[in-house]
Length: 88
Image 1 (cartoon, rainbow, N blue to C red):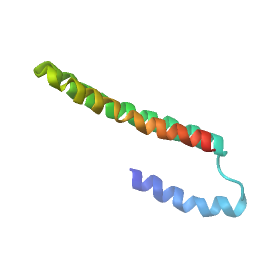
Image 2 (cartoon, rainbow, N blue to C red):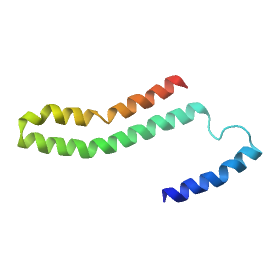
Image 3 (cartoon, rainbow, N blue to C red):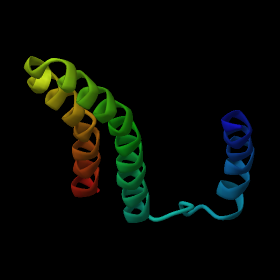
Image 4 (spheres, rainbow, N blue to C red):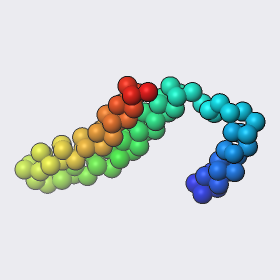
């Protein structure tokens, strides 16, 4: 499915640039889209990691620190995406 979307966008991008030389979306909207998609991906990753971390912590209390670090790790993606907003 993604291949079709990428091929479609690649085919339409030169046509859009030929008839309308301005960008398709403003840079502020692109930055907002980047942050939103990063947050969505981070939430999806944390769903599986959080469930596994809770299961591991129930088995062994010493794994709390490791579970906490692995659960918070995908949030760095959102923080880096927020940097894009301030750069734009």
